[in-house]
Image 1 (cartoon, one colour):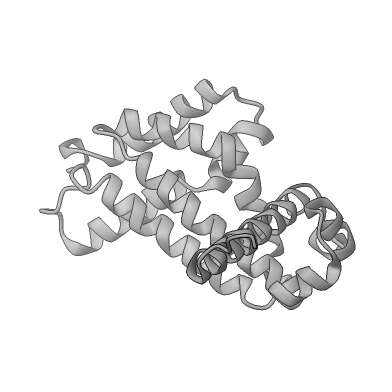
Image 2 (cartoon, rainbow, N blue to C red; image 1 turned 180 degrees about the horizontal axis):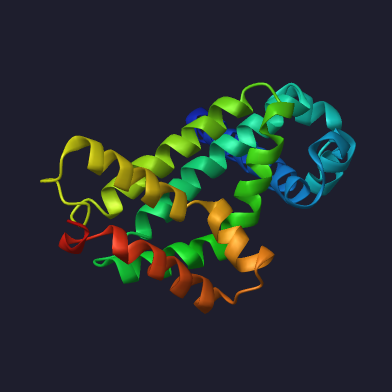
Length: 201
């Protein structure tokens, strides 16, 4: 008689297999969403990419809307970690890391914002992402934004920094204007530095 693995181990193995399946489905949805308009994505294609049945996908995520929301939720956590890592010890280092971040993730972020309204639950996640961007800008440049300024000036300076560091500004410089990554970084720096430090009065 063959030895049977202890029940807790068998359940853990099943849970791990289910987790891997879920990750494959999310990866497949992310790959589709990155290149295909959301309303043209078919669950059949996502399931085929993930090498699962449509029934498995539906059992796990319910609907295409639910699948996109789960995908965005996972990516939000990952992107937040990458944004935290992009905080440097100077405005120059921070902007260098931010441009590198947008080179990897900017197009996907902008597509999410553009199509968020098409899926229930995703607009809330997009709003969380925007709120995180504001908090990130505040934390990344807190020392340079001079806490001693009056409240109105600090709020205006922060709003300007948020706009300059937004993915849309990166897109305008990088693609609409045809700048290289280095040129984009320099352009952002030239706009940002005057907002920081005591020279602003």
